Each structure stands twice: as C-alpha cells, then as structure tokens.
Amino acid sequence: MSLEESIALVEKFQKELAQLESDKREIKNNEEERRKPIEVNVRRRSMFRYFWPWIIFAATELCLLLFISLIFLMSSHPNIGFIMNIGSYVFAALLIVIGIIVSKKKAKEDNAAYEIAVEMASQRRSDLLRRNYDLESEINSREIKLAGNPDYQKIPQDKRKSSSMARAKLLLQSGKATDFDDVITKI
Image 1 (cartoon, rainbow, N blue to C red):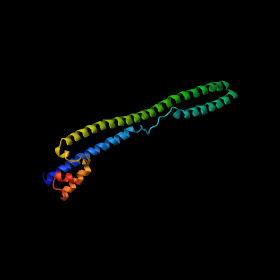
Image 2: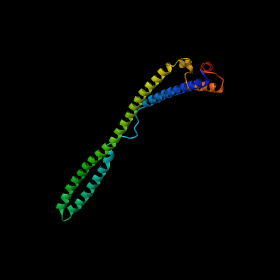
Image 3: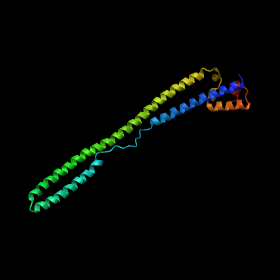
Image 4: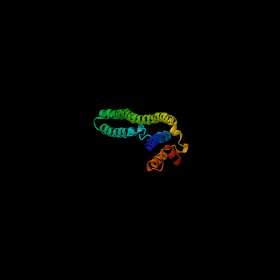
C-alpha cells in the first residue's frame, strides 16, 4: 500500500471513529438529560389568586350601599332605603358570583399554559429517546462496517480511537512511517 493510500485510509478511519465517539457522547448526554426531573418554568395558578380582589370590591360596595341606604332610611324616603338595603346584598352576591366565574376562567387559561409546558417537556424526553435509538443503530452499522474492513482489524483494540488515527496520520505525513502496517506498529 502506498503512502498516499495509507494516509487516505487513516483519514477514513479517523473520520469514522470520530463520528462514533461523537455519537456515543451524544447518547450519554441525552441519557443524562432524560434522567433529570421535568422542570417547567410556568407555575400552576389557583383561582383565589384572581378572586381575592372581587371579595374586597364586593365588601366595599356592600358597605358603601348600606351606608347610603341608612341615609335614605333616616330621610323622608324609607322605601328607597329599604330597597337599597336589599339591593346592596344582592349586588354584593352578584359581584362574588361574577368574580368566581372570571377567576376560574383566568386560572384555567393560565393552567392550560402549564399543561402545554409539561407536554412539551415530556415530548422533548421522547424525542431524546427516539434520537438515542437512531444513534445506536448508526453506531452499530458503523461498527459492523469497520469490523468488516481487514485493515481495521490490524489496529489494536486500545488504539481504535480518532486521536490515535490522527497521530498515525501525522506519523505518515512526517515520514516517520512508510505505510499503514508500519504506522500501526508505531502508534
């Protein structure tokens, strides 16, 4: 085998081994990421978060209308004061009911964002798992392809790394090794 062919062969092995090492690192990183608990930056919201201002508003309204109804009860129009007295309780109850409806709706919208974030995080996990399966099949096919090459079998097991192939390439290019067989004995 000539020097140029040996350099080309070593470069080919270096690229294949570098891709194998990269794929194995990616699998390891994906596994580490999958083991981490799901973290979502969006928090669940309770209905009370949006409801408490309605309670204050209803209480304020009730006190104000009761005070005005007292004024009317003491004046010459006690019927209007009596109607305002009953109306103030009805209006306060109505504000509470409207507050409950609006608060539930707002909390539901915010919690929908939380559910979407959780779903996206779990989808990311399943994508990582699928990517790992693809990488493992690529690694297996590369290893089978390399194992079928008789020149690859000449490389010692502990030297089957891209860094060793880079060193072999440097030895060939510098003239310290004459061909592939010679460089294998020197790395």
